[in-house]
Image 1 (cartoon, helix red, strand yellow):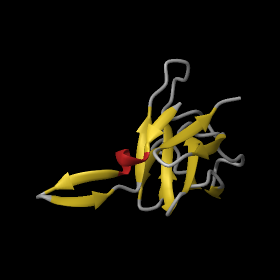
Image 2: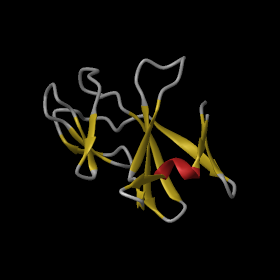
Image 3: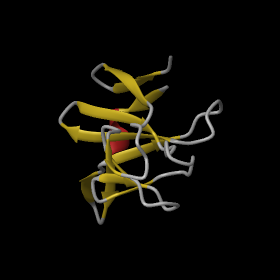
Length: 105
C-alpha cells in the first residue's frame, strides 16, 4: 500500500494544517489500517482490530480505543489498558521523499 506524505496535510481556512493520522482501507482486510505520524518521518501502522473481541477501534487523543469493552492501545499498537492482552497487528513501513509504503506480510 502506498500513502502520499501529502495526505498528512489539509487546508483549513487557507492554512496548511498537519493531520496526526490517515486511515487506509484495503480490499483484503475487513478493518482499516491507521497510519499515525509520530514525528517528522516517523510513522506507525496498526490494524484497527481489537485483539480482545474483534471490534473496530476508534482513533483519538493519541490512542486507539475500543468502543465495545474499553481496551486502549498506544499508536504503536501496544496494549495500554485491558481487557485486551495482546498488542495490535502492526506493519513495517518504508519511505521515500514523497511516499510511505505499508508492507503487508
